[in-house]
Length: 255
Ligand code: ZN
Ligand code: FE
Image (spheres, rainbow, N blue to C red):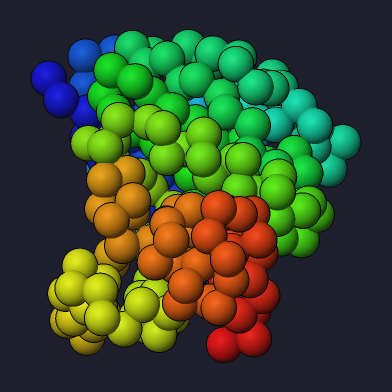
């Protein structure tokens, strides 16, 4: 039986994700932005909550952790490097650690950049990636705690995952991201087409998450920072993806 997956809008633009394996009744939550919508999603379905996986320490990803954990008796897992800032973790995870959760094996990938200890979770059999605030649809997280070089390396690790991997992101920032991508590469057909689709989805009140690695490699300028075309559009010499990535991130911060 396939997993049941619920995307839960939280706060103003966050997403949490619930995964349920019907055979074992395992229910895992990825990130805990707030309690109420997540508890409601569980209770309306009659589901328990066995595991909570946390991508990073920011309050909009952990504010519901303590209450959900105590109310549902879940086990909490999260980044080892941020354990001191995330009260209630039962198990810490670092690069390469595998979290066995019901039938799933979540491989931990360290993705410093947005925060120094940020991790993402990859389930290779299901082909899922839970990207937190590292990779967004047509965008990426702001660099609060690390360098462009570190974030570029983190995004490059993600880009090496199979193209048909489904990616859930921590926020709905897509409309703004898509406009930014189109402003950088106004003649890019794939970006223009996706911008139109995104605007229609948002106008209809639909989420743009999840995405795929393949779609991001095609239309996310941050993942395309190594392309000559992107360097040229930024007025930079080719062959320095970190410089192009840094310039993209700066421009998006000011956009
Ligand atoms: Zn964050
Ligand atoms: Fe966030």
